[in-house]
Length: 423
Image (cartoon, rainbow, N blue to C red):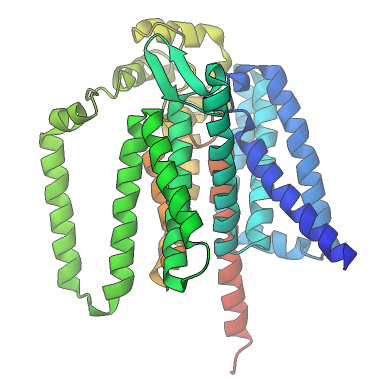
């Protein structure tokens, strides 16, 4: 009894330590640009990974872990190439540390996916989301110099635990979607947590609004639309015919055309320009001035923005008052750090995650079955105007890998059941 209770506590400590650690470098100021912090972070990751490997060994799960690694082999080419980029990195010490953290992230994501189902992952992520918003609210109210932005171009926006309002907003959007999924599930099952999830859902919307992050506004609206479509599909999929899907795609195409032809008016609603607040000119400058010199292999895994001269020069060229510290696009940051080769290898993994998520959603019986697809859409939308893949934190990568392993575990179990069935 005591041993079982100890294991449950250890499991929860590992889970929430993982979620915290994978976000820690994005908390408060620009600590991820301090090499010494990156080295220290790698040590904590190594300790946590060692504990997780010990747990897997203790319960005889190592063979299952390696079997799931083989099933998810598509991630390893990117992992290996990122390691090779250390040899031409402009800051090899940082590249080594960040690459080790990436390895630990993949292992720990595999650990989560191996030990927990999609529904359990949603539950733990939801608890972490609620905890994050709670702590962020404390900082906003009692420590506004930390929790509220006081920048001459950004005044009053909530940033809570995170270093920037956009990052806080995107995380709040993720929490909001989790709360919505839980609320829908609770309403369907009529359990006692309906009120809790309702309140968390509503408050997360308020919090998103207070971040004044257009990226989070648009991502939230987009994901709400997706969830509504998912619910309609779950309800009526047996009655849907090919003509219905064709009509839907036609409406989607017409909407996209209408949006594109009125793009200035659309961005004007949010008081933003079509340059994405200067991002497009900045991307163009980075591409022509820097990336064109190292197009195939980039500047080394996670190394580019650690060079002070790069940050200052790009800030001046973009007409920004301060040095620019990230590309504000997750895919752009992978491109600048690992080149075309690295981006292609990452996209192979990313597309594989899409394929597995869609296949799982096609068999879904409730909204939880759609969560992997919702997560993939979130990762796509959130990374358009923010770097959320692995530039200054590893949270999204951790969740993506955990979902991949959880889905592969289901696939392997179904395959084994099929093979052991009646001949």
